[in-house]
Amino acid sequence: MKRVDTFRGGVAYVTGGSSGIGKALAEELLSRGATTVLISRGAERLEQARSELAARLASGRRDRVPGGVMPPVEAEVGDVADSGSIEAAFQRAASRVGPPTI
Image 1 (cartoon, rainbow, N blue to C red):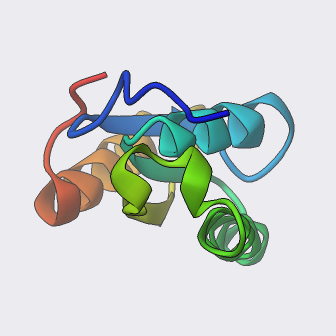
Image 2 (cartoon, rainbow, N blue to C red):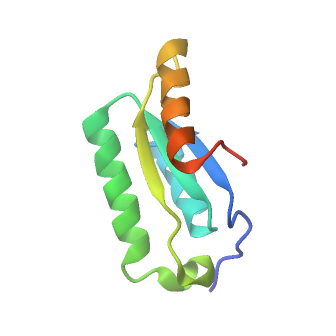
């Protein structure tokens, strides 16, 4: 079953994106065409999640991605409990993929 490209061309930032609900939300946004930035505190776990999502959607699941073209998945370290940290993460993400639109 093909996914609807509900978020194609959009940009989403997902805090807590390295695991659990955040990671699942990021995967759904990617599968619907959104450029997605994962934001979390732990750099190693964050990069692991980014790599896993990119690989999972790229291998054998292109038929589920709008137009068969994978949107980018990026990662930025940031802590929502620290306003300076999360603000810096958002600024870095915005410089690479643009501001969030979703």
